[in-house]
Length: 373
Image (cartoon, rainbow, N blue to C red; front, side, top):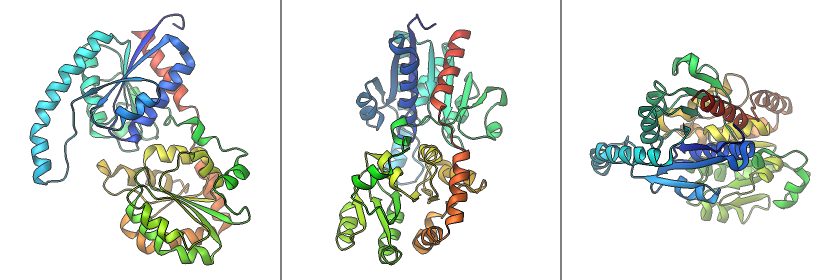
């Protein structure tokens, strides 16, 4: 196998939560097989994958596909009316790509962009593998899993959604450079110009920030200052100017629009406030710091709440519903900083859930399916 060229299509996207694990799978394939792995991505035109995949060094072909709009505005109703036509068009395009590229396997990572390519591969009797990041699967993966050969999952108890004989518990593949924080605290303190004698709170609300979290943190800046807690605050673009203005008069508040060096941020943090996307959770399990989750309430199938609950049930994190963040988030964080034994317990428990070799496990399953043909 290692001496033969193997062709793989990785399909899906729409959000970073889908495309970053897809890139991590591709990187694991390249690491294992070097130049013997020929990888092609398919995604949705205009979505994040069309930028991030080429940045990672891989080729991608965009399909003219959109998802079903869940809110009922006139604009969204019109978009939904065009959905069947786009699905038909993208399905034909995906089949043409499959025939021309002739893959040995097609891997779907979820999101509406994965549907046409995975469905085309199934119809053409090409082996298929689905990677489901969340504790509650998206509709595309639920439908396609009925015909797919294997489903790699990140959470236990997924038998209620997928055929038990198809499930392999692999975890979510994460970017190694992000979770590699061992021995980096001093460097991280210097990197963010922090005080090494103070406790550090890290706020991450995703690449666009999180409006509810940002407002709650801003209202609590005086209380954090009184408690002698310094803050690394990833605000996202929409809230950055307001946060920067508020941080000007606070010596220990470091407002940053977007943090590229997440290993530094994780290494510096004593407590982390985060949304509950699947990949963020997988990173945080590996990082092993106490976390307060504020799930994004409008995620499909409310999967962020379900993701956070999976950790809450194991006493591995705290959670504040988005609607209660303005009232409870600052108070909860301050109480956690005051309770070192609870911090230690949360840290120990979340580490137990870490899977650091998910990419390698998924590659094992991919190669097994190729061998079977």
